[in-house]
Picture 1 (cartoon, rainbow, N blue to C red):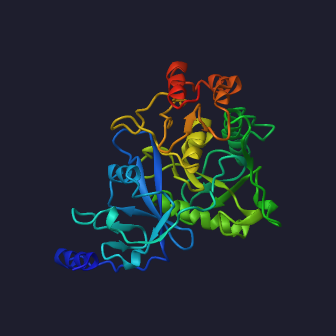
Picture 2: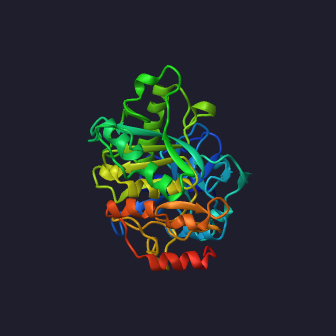
Picture 3: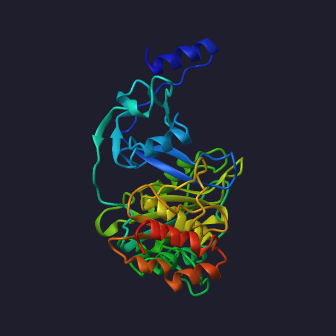
Length: 375
């Protein structure tokens, strides 16, 4: 008896009208989302999401954060690099809001039938060069973001004369990569200039409330509204492609968000709630996820590695899960692209010191560099 039939029998026994399983739109591209948790015990550090054929995201419910992290560690999950067909899986159902796995002792993530394996593809988030980015401010039917487009554009890009923020995702990545990674505000497609309320920034009004809506329903609604404004399918292609999209919403309702932000590993999207979009430390952290970095952790603690922590809020990923890369002072260092000496640039350190976000000491960071044969 398959999982759908089990749900049907269970619903009948409870006297509840069964919910018909719906067809998923195409193949599911599996992404790992990492959350920057701010409430201990109330936040899943990792979630799986399915991206359908139209770019909508749906949570894949069943595996725990530990299950996901174990699958990442043993190589059975590589975020964004494999697909499966939910419509062909007896142990996966789709209700239009999320996918649910019959995650029992005899069915695990390893039992999913991988239909297509994606070995190498163009990165959404380039690790060097010019990174073209779009900031999407989300207003809903019940709550609006408190900040103006000009202020948020400055907080991310440092580009507005009235709101000059020297410490932002752009300045930090430039300083810590010796100007090898540059985050530029994206430009509008031809004829869509009026929708850009500040450099790299648009504002959308979604047709659903924040209160009671899931994280992914909100992001899907915002993406669709942004596509209507810009006349392209995000993240776009060719000259109209955005390498990264930051989404900003007022918060979570009726219960407060247990996270500051979240991002897809190796993908193009990140979501910020409340005032966290104004924090350069949070921006750089989430952008690092888009670049392919997971939380490094220490023992059983997702944020337990404090060796190069640079956030006054919570812990950055420092050592990471693939070789020859070090996340230090909030920036990516590729040993084959940037000399190791560039890791300790005075400018990079001073920016973070001025912002009051330097946590930890030089000694453990030098130890990491020595262990990685950088010195």
